[in-house]
Image (cartoon, rainbow, N blue to C red; front, side, top):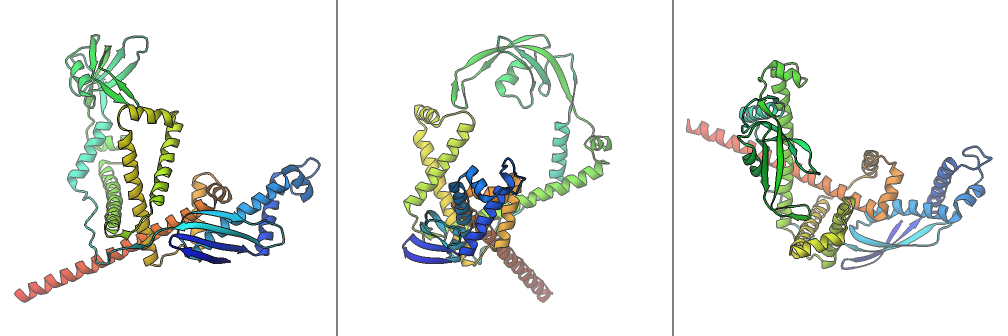
Length: 432
């Protein structure tokens, strides 16, 4: 049971009381899991007394597991019950004891008041790209190019050849170069040369990753020259791609292109609608909310760099040397503001449409997400924590509201088109 204690502006405080029966059930679930997983010498799995298991894992461990389980479940439920969309929250749990109710207090900050402009009459202009015969033929030509055959060529190098070169020097290696997609300085140096020639390629100054490379020369030897040969666009070509005939290839390829075009159109309409919501939205966004999002985005970047073996301090120093740090931080701030505005607009949309995600829907998506990441739902809940679970619930609500609004607009546009067609038909009949 959740009870609202106070609400002043964006600041909110509420108390949650979990009945003793729920507490006991959580204890039983934790003990059942420990009995299954903890091996105690002299006892068969699941048969060791609780006191023995407690001696191996510690009493504090059991209480912490129960507390985490209760918070993961009842924090998000309480937020939904009180219809609170929390940006962030601090949870203060009271002492936990088996057989007694468990209480915790939450102090948090809700999203600011938001007003959306009327969007009910919006006509979305974004549409799926048309898959014409020209588009299909161009895609088939691309398939021909990607499946081209290269034969030995006893002549000077031409623009569409594949050339194998051996880079001279200690760090050299042998690799193919496809001239039709090669950089201009490489293509210009190799055109007209022959197998066995030694060629100097001047590489212009450029930046690669975090490093600035000055202009330099690379010496290579031409090992092999091959000419590109396109396969005929016929049944044999289709069979080489595991299609029974060229006609079947064309049919399946067109269906796939149309499927992708439909997805592209849907994504474009979503973006157009969200842009309209944000443009017409009024909200007094607290700077703390913007700062929190910017810090979270910066932390993501730091994690990505860390996985690549790059320390944030080194990357920051490099950008400062290049005079790009201020621009980077400004862009980060703009992106954070854009994301916050989008989230606020969609959150208000869900509120206006009275959209809710049922417990069954939420549990189903959590299970699917856990499976996709190779986790059990319990492990995923533990990783997300109470705030993470609440954020995930909010994201599902936003997505459901967006889908509902797009469907509503699509229905309205269909009706409008039908009325327009009927009017044109009536006008034509009158003219006759």
